[in-house]
Length: 157
Image (cartoon, rainbow, N blue to C red):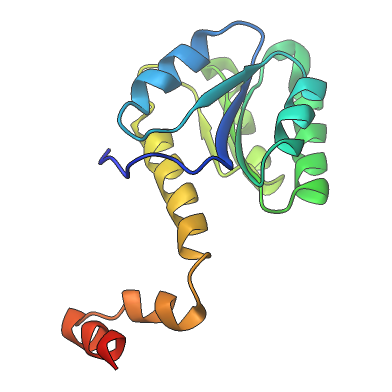
């Protein structure tokens, strides 16, 4: 994953898990992005961290004993924080929930701490999209034109 420089102060990845195994793996996968990873152990702690920022991506650990809670959290996240996103971290035993979790709003579901490249790419896209949204609609459209000289010419005018 290419570096995008230092993260904005109002961008954060919050990992909600019982242990710190996923957080450690995510820090490793996100090396070079300049994004701080905040660890929480409970949904209440997650809510405090979300309230402290404007743009949040949550990484929620789903275990056998909290499956129903994760579904409730995804619903609550979508209702209360529409600009936030969520990734679900689980193991192979619970992989059957993937598509239902996506229907509930999960942007991605991963079952492997060893293969977090797709999550790292998603994190990069999520926060770069937010950076794009700070541009005016004209700037955003111009930056996506297939010919760079057209965009440069308009900027000069």
